Length: 448
Ligand SMILES: Cc1cc2nc3c(=O)[nH]c(=O)nc-3n(C[C@H](O)[C@H](O)[C@H](O)COP(=O)(O)OP(=O)(O)OC[C@H]3O[C@@H](n4cnc5c(N)ncnc54)[C@H](O)[C@@H]3O)c2cc1C
Image (cartoon, rainbow, N blue to C red; front, top):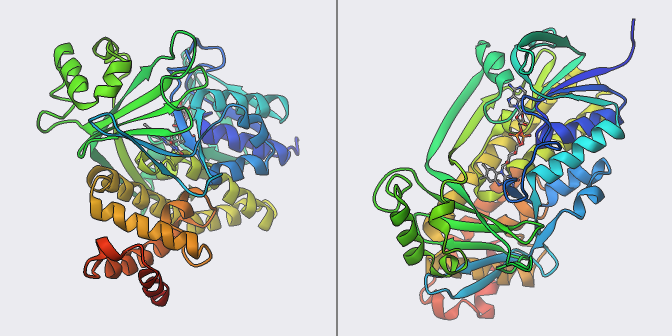
């Protein structure tokens, strides 16, 4: 009988392919089942593979297993937000200190590179076109549909990891059938549609590539992140339904054309053919999915399968990568006694998954309702000034989430405490005039 340690990973997305590298390094024979075909062989133009913002938690997880440097050459640093007003005025808000950046990476590019590493440097085999259709949680056995042959096949391993995303089949077919398994799914009012802004004819960028561009318009917004080939992937977030500024109302080319012309004039100038490109990408929905526990028997859920969230803090993938960091630490701690590893993983990580989701929702409201509010912006300016004067006393919430590995739950608790203090500071009469004074800084320091 083979004594080789074995693991199955369902889903070769971002989290599954990174976790495969970890397990391979720990000597596991890893078998990955992915329902799609191999993205490395598919004809995907750069613009089609949407991009994401990678930040410190993600880099920590990548670097711990030696993958970070292989991803760095695919990453474009973004040092702040570039806000585009309706008049076309630009204002730049740095994300943190001068050298701090979040990184635009191509989902497909990073995914493909990690699959290469898992297969060639580790002991991993990826089976494409294999869709998980059932799971026996106690025995670590899964049922799969081979989509090429239409055959049903089974596999079994010492441990199984469900990295099959927000609509996880393992969760649905296994966990959600369990007694006392908690699950909730909440779609927000907004959906999103991607738009590819092509490069100039000479291949150069139409916008500054080192910023995340935002066109905030109250109840809806457009954002743009640079791709390596000179293009930008832009995303319009907006309510599905309700009034003229909704996806439902943008139902003809003429309406799309005049909407962009009036609402995002500088964008329209760069892409006058927007109406023709409008349907290149589907309209998609956004949801928060909470579940607990994140394991049962020989199976654990990681990434979106456990804690899918809305994308407004840019942390879904980063949080999923951090699941790998936590699982890896617990593997060492419990000497790969998986019952203990899984039990502690569920208990320790769940509050951070909840906080990641709460923070993402909070930022949805901030971006939707507050970014253009002068008092909100003043509040952020006061915080930034204080943090620069006393960096050891005040790390803004955004920096805790994006530029540190502080647990999401701790970051959220300290953000709430900071909010309480700032509420009091904002009550000071004439705060608009006196905010820049040393007196205000002293008052803030006293409250800590
Ligand atoms: C518009 C948008 C923007 C985002 N921006 C950011 C960002 O800037 N930063 C960030 O950190 N996060 C961002 N996210 C979140 C991020 O995309 C997810 O958190 C991340 O993709 C989760 O990775 P995952 O591996 O858990 O799931 P996925 O990436 O969804 O991968 C799941 C994999 O499982 C496969 N699969 C599914 N079902 C089965 C099955 N039954 N059998 C076999 N295989 C299966 C799928 O084909 C897929 O390959 C964004 C999300 C959206 C929607």
